[in-house]
Length: 172
Length: 437
Image (cartoon, rainbow over all chains, first blue to last red; front, top):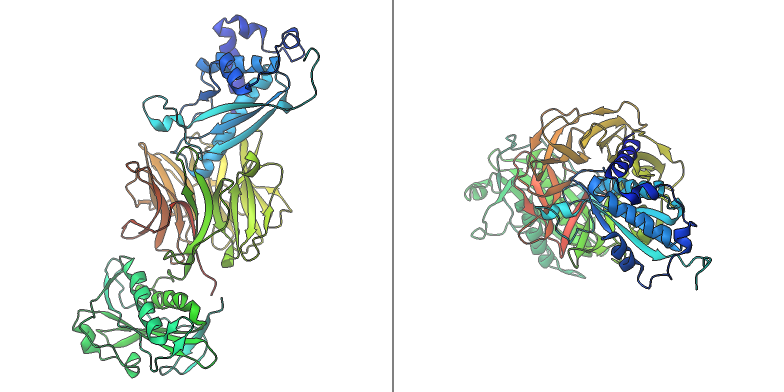
């Protein structure tokens, strides 16, 4: 199974990176000390996520579904942010580039989003807080990436919002 | 709309029956036939709600000529210098007049107002050189439906001369696109092939893609992004009633079976996309493919026994054919690059596709076993082919990277001549089907 291989690759990349975060965070769940110590609910969740992770968008190679090892720190930071903000839910939105046929684009967008969702779940985010969706090639990227504009299409965007769930301990 | 077909004897003497095409006048499939299309005759110029019969005759003649001119198969002769044939000459043409302007074929016809308020319209197609009739057809229509009768007359000429199926009395569903390129409004539009009778099926408040006709053009299946998750919707065009086929999941890429009783579509579960079949009321969901790779873009063969689809199970996107129950899956595309968006021709003989190779997307066709591949277009962005009812033309979407606009194009299959299909806004994702007789 490609996905199992992907996850294994992801973990090996994480450990291999020697990042302290990577060794601390993989299996920690919300409700941990870090979560209890979280600040107030961010007024602008998306901006808060971007401030923490550096970006809310990760890119894929054309036709690629594998997570690029270089974006592992970004996804790890997204996982940390989600754990630290337990009332937040996330839509994991997969996109395809323009040179995919229209329905294949929906399918591969879904597959990319699922790869990111699997990473976040593996790193401690509860699955029921994450919703995988695909936009196929219907929302062309506006951020150039690499040499061609087309490369901007293959991406996954984590869109967070306050679920409006019950307040947590320590929430003012 | 009711359009009654008549069998024409002598001009105007009619009884209900079928049109009778005769053998083709032009067996050379690559040749263009010069056809003369004089103004249709009318024995008495009577007023109708759509104008006088003379006006209708002139408008119909223009529509017929426009239809035939839109293909590479016909050159419409200039007949302005010739007198308009009299009513009796509709069925007894003076061939020497038409050969004199270089015409190899002749289309004559008449428009008569009947006492019951309907129009009786007759069309005749002749081989000028052999001085014989090739085909004829007659119709009883409400005056407002004269345009459809004109398309039927053009089809009589098209089929009579080329030997292929009808083409112009057909409908196109497509995605009309407007607004910002980064977040376009996409709604479903339906129209006749010539752009008339255009209506919008969805409002544009939600993104919609991949419309597909049901047989008899009564329903459309499409993929809606309402609620933020793609899902297949079936809409009844007469009532506007919509049904979400598989609520609560991700489904897309619908295709009606030729009997209209079921659909094939893609369903994604945990990121894995497979092809399923489901009854058109949403019951009886059954899985047809089980690979851990992407299986999508199913399209039925016209007999309903097979499904062509695309899959990246080999590591790249390729075309596969299976029985309609999911058995006997086999790969058919082995050329350079990747293949997607397959479509099965109405005569069952060919499969059109998008080939993605060297950074370019092109339209091609192949036999249903993958042999005799033929690339029709130059790209760089041609995709989503759909066959017309005549099985000798393919419509597709083409993006112009210079202007950023996407529009519908049509091309003959044997002599590619891609040219635009006029739509009010950008157009993509066409589904083209012959109208119910």
